[in-house]
View 1 (tube, one colour):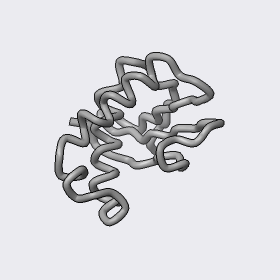
View 2 (cartoon, helix red, strand yellow):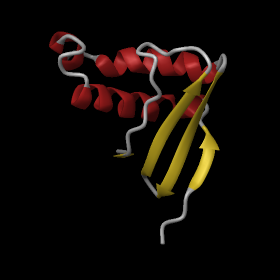
View 3 (spheres, one colour):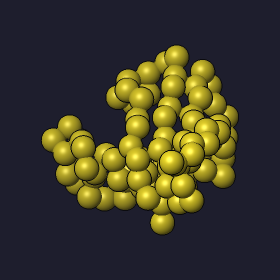
View 4 (tube, one colour):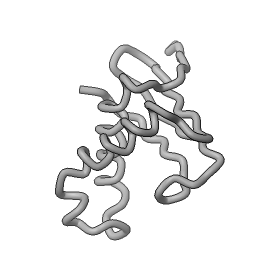
Length: 95
């Protein structure tokens, strides 16, 4: 049985959260965002956003769910809409 550990994401998680978010956008937002954006340095864009969000969260909580070493899912809850107004949940293997 896999055990789960939930914890609040902090500034040290910004890089991994950005990689996860960029990967999710590249997989699921084709047609919603320009291919030139998704094929460009979307990681830098997400890194900038998440560095700010996790350093000084405003009306939001970002939770990391760890299921095994190197495996986690991310959930963001906000009382104000994010860029697309939706929480992002995407399991991924971290590098």
